[in-house]
Image (cartoon, rainbow, N blue to C red):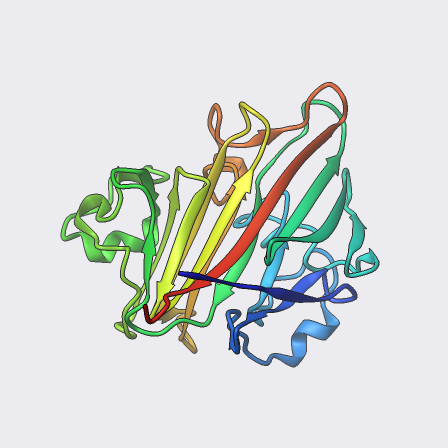
Length: 275
């Protein structure tokens, strides 16, 4: 394996969105055009154009995909910030040995709870796979009901199984379009995506006691119903649910007494050598 240095580009005016994550002649981020993205305002329904969106204080629920993707950020690509309704978020981007590192600092009242996700939509082939520690606890959400072969339990927010085939669903392979869409949360903070000879490693680091996970959105032409397309999300996150209002004990990050919470996102790439 050889290290492939990565470089990221951002659009601060459009929600601080990551528009590129490239290295070794490969672009890792998937994107799609939608002119509505340029006109969004806080509180509107999410407009999906791919890349990496910063989702905070929730992913699903309200506001849809959070409160910062729809707000202009200030600063530079290296250090930027955004002001939400009841918090501020600062992001510093650096390079460490070819990896792109995002350092985050959230300022809010002590006790403020939230979910954050680096909502990364990746440009992957049908044979790509997601590797996580075997038997990682994995929460599967209700859109998977049609794949289970039995009724979804009434009132269940999610069902839990073990990676790589929670509830008998082989989620580690992405595959071609089959009309399905599945959301899951792996209770681990580090995963890798393997696509041909290329490997992308994603890791989130947070203080002890802060829940770290990796969200998976495997949309194989099952969403949205009126005009489905294929999109694959591998999303390092703080928290263990998509919707903050569904968070139980330990399912959300909480701002400590200092009024600030800091964490890091590390994204690195490698390529299998011919040796």
